Every structure is written in C-alpha cells, then in structure tokens.
Length: 126
Image (cartoon, rainbow, N blue to C red; front, top):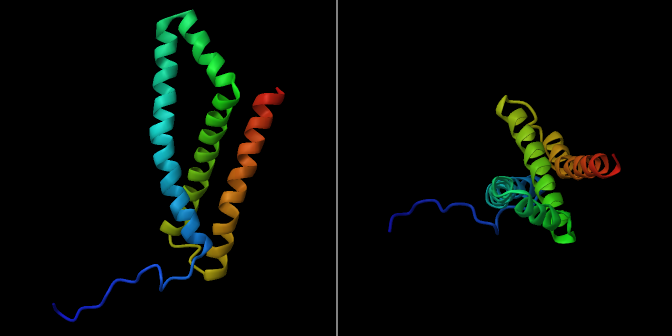
C-alpha cells in the first residue's frame, strides 16, 4: 500500500458540543422523516376513514404514549430547526470563531428545549 495520510479518527478529535449538535441534527431529521411521516399518514388515513377511525387515532395520541410521541416530534423539530439556523449562519461565513461556535453549539439544544416547553405550554394551557 502507498504511504498516504490516514483520516482523523474519533481517537484524535476531542468531543465537543458542535459534534453533539451535528449528530442531533442528523438524528432528529431522520426521526422526523420516519416517525413524523408515520403519524402524518395515520392521521390522514384516520380522517379519511371516518369518525370511528379518527376517534381511535385521537384517543391514542391523547394517551401518555401518544403524548410522548408528539412531544418527541416537536422536540425533534425545534432541535433540527435550531441546528439548521446555526448551520445557516455558518454557511454565510459567520460564527466560525471558536468561542462563538461553542456558545451557539451549547445554546442550540437548550433553546430547542425551551421552545418545545413553550409550545406545549401554549397547546395544553390554552
């Protein structure tokens, strides 16, 4: 084999908040695509199926397991959105300073949790 440089591996890189945000961005995108699509298709099928079918859907989504799914989907949405906004700022050439990048990497999931809590407070307390 030729003497070529090896790619950096996880043993070389220090774990940082930017890595967590990047992984969360991918995981939440996949989660929304898979779980969100399943819930959307079930909801559309329940609406097309009539009152009884929709009542079954509404009963499940109102149960503790259904609420966990819905809260999880909204958390995934807000986490993906905040990470996407962070990447948008990076794409325009800003935010590459190490301290600023680390700060936004830490704040991104925290803001997503606050947005999720605020959203569900609005939904449930209305």
